[in-house]
Length: 123
Image 1 (tube, rainbow, N blue to C red):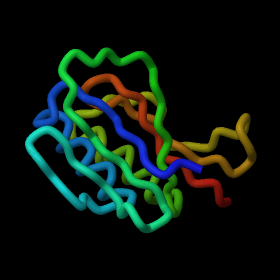
Image 2 (image 1 turned 180 degrees about the vertical axis):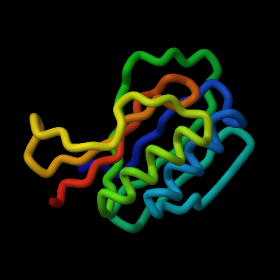
Image 3 (image 1 turned 135 degrees about the horizontal axis):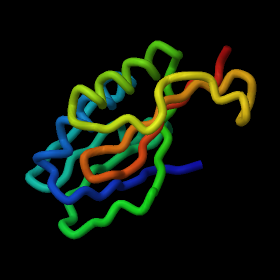
């Protein structure tokens, strides 16, 4: 449904290691890098594209982005990588049966407080 999304951060130098780590854990490559922005995925893949852009003055307001994970191990890897790269826990990896029986997800806050999630929908 979405073609591309941009997440804004206050300080790209602080946030880039976090996004490099969590996207690598999900198998999504960084495809370009500039002084104030970086991009993940492939624009023509049909799988979506993510830009992380520096925008000083951004205030985290519980915005939420959820990334698809190929399996539960990737969800766990996303969570561990994000914590190791400066993120904060906002929900450990596990089942969320109130969404559906196989909904396995983890939640993190990036260094600016943006809420990001990885989910696997398969049992």
